[in-house]
Image (cartoon, rainbow, N blue to C red; front, side, top):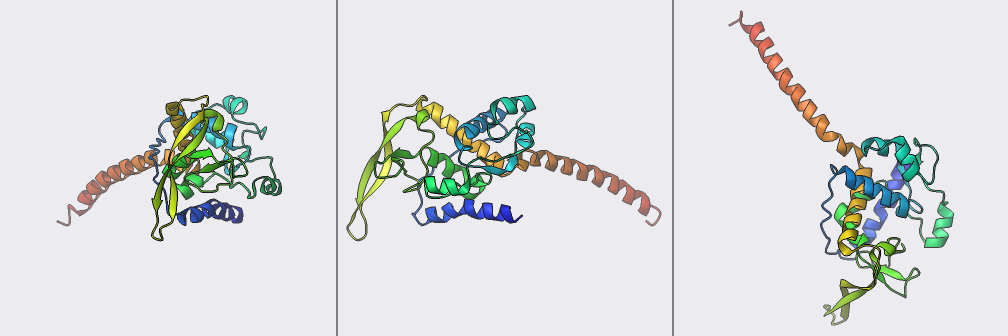
Length: 246
């Protein structure tokens, strides 16, 4: 329980930092937890591009397989690189001390990142990296200024330069705001394909933050049907019990 609380604090910490930046115009993620193909694609992107640095310590491969309609063999062959047991948690081999030396901060666990950040924030964030030679990894982010994370998806969407818009603040200082991006090196995906890939990844992160969402509607329907049947039975029992009284 203590580890879970710590993970929540780590995941929520960047939110506080972002809130002080004044917000950003977020794009709608439009995730759909009923889209199994999207969740499967998002899981594949997650384990290939995120799981090497970011853990998901509160999700098991076996739970993911069950919820996403995957067989044990499919998970072992395509989605498991840091463990050899399908019942294992989605951990990483990198130690916290090493990651702090490399990145400046320990990459947060992503199990509940979608609950901490929100789907729209994550979707916009993953589409907002741009080239910035002044940063340690050569990139910055329009949503999270001076981000410490490298752009791990750059091969998919390519390299982009920011398009700025200037305006004066209340003190007369010139403020530059990123309003768009210009591609300087294309990636392996078109913009439409990348948007879909990011949406699928965010969809998986949303699922991972609360897997019970997939089952909750069916449980709710079952409860309502049960209550409806019990109402009918109770009504006739009451009628039979009180008929002699009245």
